[in-house]
Amino acid sequence: MDTPSRYAVTLPGVPGAHGPARVVVVHATGQTTADGAPVYADAADTLRVEITAGAARPLTDPAGPGRHTCLTATPLP
Image (cartoon, rainbow, N blue to C red):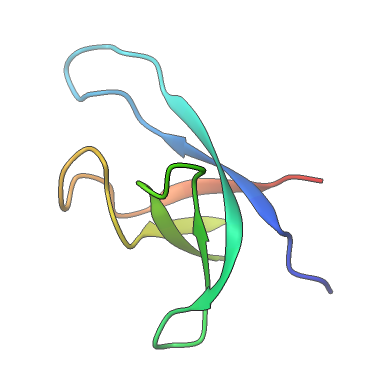
C-alpha cells in the first residue's frame, strides 16, 4: 500500500475556551524520524508530525510544547 503524500491533522481547540478544532493539511517532507517514520509538515513548516496508523505525533507544536501528544490524521487524495 502506498503511503499518502498528505494528511488532514485535527488540532483541538484551547481547553476550557470552547474553541473549535482546527484542521491543518500536512505534506510529506521526504525526511524520516530516527525510527524511520515519514515526517509531514504544514506549508509554513510550523507543525511537523510523524503519522502512524491514523495518529499524528507532533515533532513540533505551534501551540506550545507538550500540549498535543496524539492527533487524528486523515489521509487526503
